[in-house]
Length: 227
Image: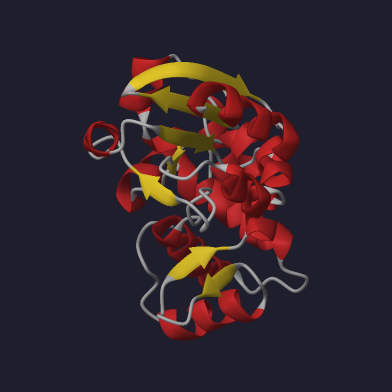
């Protein structure tokens, strides 16, 4: 499944992924998987992404009708990964009328390469592990929000993000991080869950709020820390 079948064209497979709501194409041509598809992929990821070799081999053998004595060699030869298996099963489940195996395998390969967009709301600047220290040095009074994919409280809190941003006092910067991609940030400030809101004053962490918080609760916190 890792190798592209020679008789399957990638472009029509990508077009179908876009047409069926698996992939979203932005105005600038950037591609990301959709939130609806990621909900489906999450179910299969939880089951198959970390399964033992025996279960992985057994699933591949059953799925592609491969002799169990030969499935290990097939996996080695194709370079098939658990991520590709998850993507294959997810696309097949998501589509109302899934195509034949070869096309489905190409679609799964595309999905693995594209991946989801950032969970950080567009209303705030996104930081990575290589940027947050400089950001805090430049903006000693700052609010840093933490988000992640597959997080229902995060999605709920995003509905309030404009009101939250509007309540940040003048002179206080606001940014966001994808919790899955900033292990150094999480270790530095002991952040284990999302959503989270960290309040920095004079470059020092003063308050951390975890879980969904209302705009009113955060506005009160901003007032207390930055008054």
